[in-house]
Image 1 (spheres, rainbow, N blue to C red):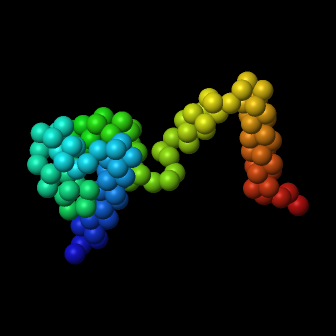
Image 2: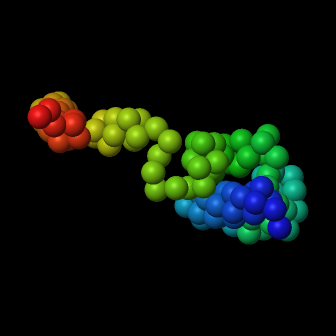
Image 3: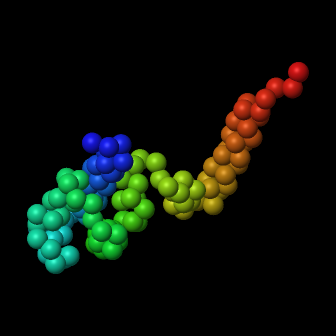
Length: 123
């Protein structure tokens, strides 16, 4: 197997896992997903097992069906978001104004400290 084919297989498995997780999180069965998409259950199963990569249009349909961002599926459901700032903003949106300000100030202080630590020392 070529390196490119191996990478595609790994990518398909990662997307498949993300699809299965998103479907499960949405409370749908493979049968329900297949019916909503107008495909047979085996198609959904092959996507989730990583045997077949869904076409891009179908990936967007799945994201919409499961109410997740398409990029989350493309990232393979990775723990790390493609947009950490968006994740942080979403977490902070549930805080009070004073708590949001506290977190903002703390993050700013930590960024300054870490940037200072990473800066090369001048001798």
